[in-house]
Image 1: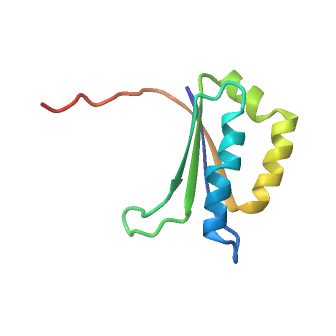
Image 2: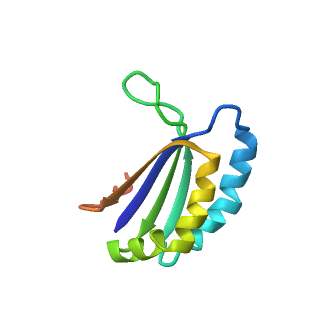
Length: 110
């Protein structure tokens, strides 16, 4: 599995509530329309360890079954054009592409 993680902030003066509305509706729909995507999650970052101060305010994760599927979807010229427009709404983005090495689910405790 391949995961795209994007951490970012809002530009100075941006409206948090307006951003959340856009991010959880229009942009989420755009994310989920990427060919081959398995799921897309959005988070508001509420803290960091050890000092509690996180350098980023938001995080998006998008999951794909493999690298080829991710690359076809993410690097598609139409998607890149839409992404360029979306990037106007955020600040300081950091895009991380990772490939799963191991995944484990905890057993329910008795």
